[in-house]
Image (cartoon, rainbow, N blue to C red; front, side, top):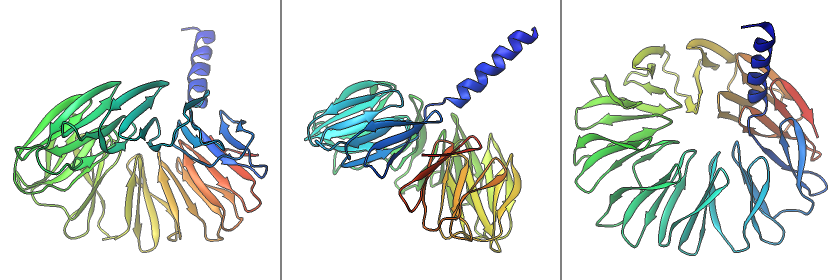
Length: 361
């Protein structure tokens, strides 16, 4: 491969990483709705909106005329002028008008149900109740898939992750739905407490009396006793045994994280933090790494980023093994979008951290 082709491929990879579709909305001092997108500020509305909410790749808002709109990173689309009840994830929007439920993903809109009960929106699908037929269904890859039919009072599945569902059917058989397929755990009248993430579900298995992890189509009996606490992330599980030791399970293997009995630990997406004697740690490539030497008063975890209130009252982040100070202005508000952080300062100005660069509006 010659140098010109290599250089082109490097640039293409860099460009695709740099312009990943992510939004970071804010209302400035003029009342305009803006978003940081692809390193620039883009104005979406010149009149104050009634409300807005966003995930990594999608922004939904009600404008000043009560119109319900979606900005997908490239364009704004007016969905309806009617009053709606809505939810969204990082990628998908669902809204309800009366008993009708609708979904939006990648620019595609679809009517999902005419007799809707509860519904939940995750990164890869929408789970909803059809109260006419008393069924639980999932909208996945633009297809409506029937999970089960219920006979008594309708309830939602026991565990709903970003792309995986754990539930018990009418025959008291526990099943898992993952990437369009069903996997059977087994029948048991006892309740299982399941925790779902992305591609993994962890649970104290009342069928085998083990602590079990479902990972990428396989069941693993990880421990031969029930665990005290467990949380599923993006492709991994952290669990605490009965004497307070922390363990990580991933790709079919487990290893000990801490013997400290920390008490404070948290898992969100790719992020995992824990406390040892007021020192805060994470794993960087499965290596124990200290973040800071105190417990912050507030923090946010998402997508491998840790944003927190520093000891001066400002905002800092820990990302890819490095602490970065964003501001020492106290009481600044912060939100993680994708691998970026949006900070609102006291004077209604904003700063945006993206790929090591801090941008001000």
